[in-house]
Amino acid sequence: MDQAGLSAGEVGGVFAGVVAALAALGKGLAWLLNWQGARSDRKADRLRVWEESLDRRDKEYRQQLEHDLEELRAAHLANATEISALRNRFRALRGAALELVIEVRAISPDSPALKRADAMLRTAFPVEVVLPADLTELVNQLGEI
Image (cartoon, rainbow, N blue to C red; front, side, top):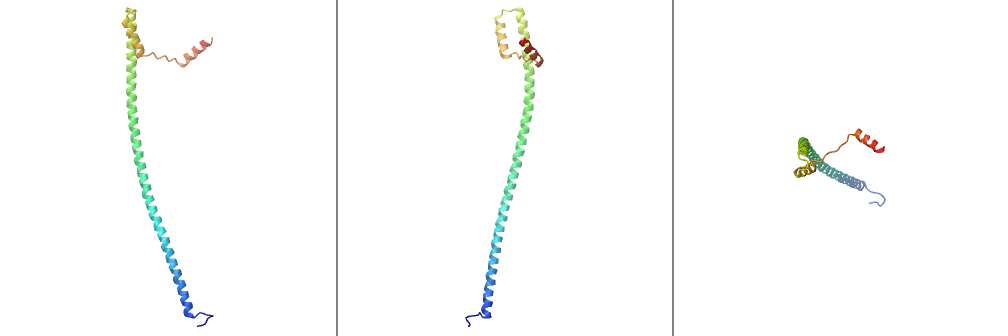
């Protein structure tokens, strides 16, 4: 064997070794890339399932909120109707009580029962003094004179 050159078999063996090493390296890279791709696919699947779960929970939560809001609106309308009826009864009762106090005062102005009833009615039914805007303005103008 010659120190300076390589025989054809040796060159072929080296070439075959290099080709085999490159093929093994290529297969290793392909496996690694495929492993990373499969890992990415599994991760994407888990994220998709999680997003679907979030969407489903969000939809259920939204439906529950809308249902609760509708119930509150219905209850509010019912309460508003009841409050309006109570206000009308309150006004009628207050008016009737004040008419009776005025009538009894004309008959017996010094009656102690009348004074007690008058005090109770004024406590239970305070007089609402609300002046219209134009009358309030007129009172303010009179105050400036």
